[in-house]
Length: 298
Image (tube, rainbow, N blue to C red; front, top):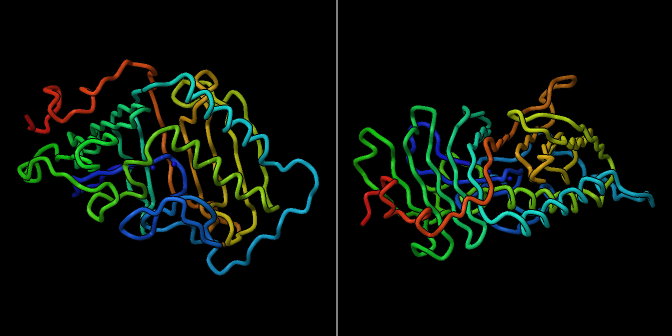
C-alpha cells in the first residue's frame, strides 16, 4: 500500500504499501470505513474519481467460491511467510502517485525496513530535486516522530527536523505515511480490501504466472471491478507476488476511465527492486547518530 517527498519538498513520508488505502485530510485515520471507499486507509490527495455518484454494488448472493478467495489465500499465505521468515530487508523502492489529480514523476529511494520493532530508513536516489534526502522512523523512538533532512541546497541548511508522521507537513506530496511503508503493510491492506470486496459481485480475478519484475519471476494477480461502484476503491489493480520470497514486489491501482472506451487511469504504483532479506539490521541502522548517515546528530 505507499511513498516519499516530491520536488521542492524536503520532508517525506511512506506507503505501501503499496496499496490504495490512507486519508483525504492532513492526518491518517487507520481503520476508517466509508460506504464509498470500503475498509482501511483513505489516500491523502484523493481516491478514485470514476465512481463518484455511482450506486453501491449489490451484495454477493452466489453460493459458490468468490473469485477473490484464491487471491486472499495467496495473501494470507504471504503474511504467514513474512512473519515466519523475514526479520528485515533492503530494497530499491520506486514510487509514483497521483495526488489531487496530478500524476507525479517517479521517485527512487534505497530503503531499509525492520519488522520488529517496525523501523524504516530511506535515502532518496532521485529525481535530482530530492536526491540525498534521508528519513528515519523507528517505532517507540524519537517521541514517535520521523526525522528528515534535505540532501543539498538551501533546504539542507534547515538541518534535521522532527515531525509527526501523519502531520500536514510530513504528508505533503504523499498518499501514505511512513508508518504504512513495506511489503507486510501492503499485504495486510490487500487482505482488508479483498475481504471487503468479497461481500459484493462484479469482480473479475485473473492469475498470470511467470510474470517478471526487474528480472524476478512473479505471479501477477489482476483484480477488476468493471462497473464503477461506490463500494470499490479501484477499477483495476495488479499485484506481483515474488515466487521465491512470497511477498508483493509491485502494486498498481487504476481508476475507471475518464471517458467511455478510454484507458484506466493510474492512481498509484510501487515497486520493490533488488530486495535482500534478513540483513541482520540492528538499532544502529535506524539511529540518526549513525556516522554513515548525514542527520548531523550526536
